[in-house]
Image (tube, rainbow, N blue to C red; front, top):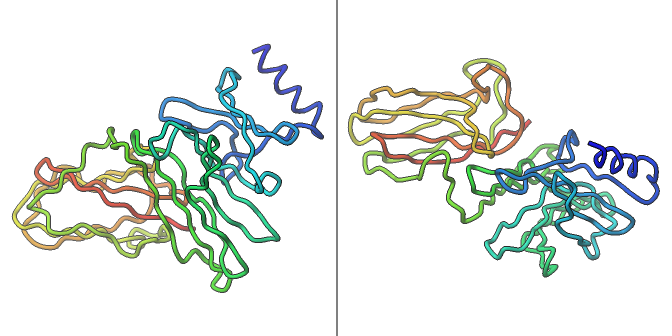
Length: 269
């Protein structure tokens, strides 16, 4: 506790030299997950970024090259996204009023993902986190003419998502999709998105929705028998408590006679 107090006083007392950055889109926290069971803190001291563990053990020091002074959001950092054991940082920059998103390897300086904004489109990261042990993030394009998000890109690492079950496609299942996708969560029970699946024979069905951290947010079907044919289930974008879920990527898991199929959808507000 004493170390924490000294550390916080340092940031408060020398704001000219130390800038504590917001790590999430909402700016509600500066600690974020670098792994499913680990959290990191990133700060900017003078003209250098530093990563600390929760006990303030330093993990790494880095800069972002030509983007160093233009960073508007640091969404997160992890070791790692592409299986080379290096740390990658996901961040947004604001250059001349235009927003772009980058994923950079801080060891090599290589930019691995890049979406550059301009007067027509701005880019934001709407979700960063984990589905089990699998790293997930979503970059969305904001159309400056339509004043809405018109396109989204979902990225996932090669680590198998462990806590929602290994996906194993069933020959009994013909298709699994949802529409519209992306969708805006509904204000009534009949709006939102429609999840559609097609069965080749009568089957036992379970259907659950998870967030990008692998947490169960809604159980839509609980061990029911469905006849052969096409079936639809409406999900209004609310969780199991009836609350509207925030923008981000979500995964719905359909279990057909014990075999699992996964698909993803995006909530936009």
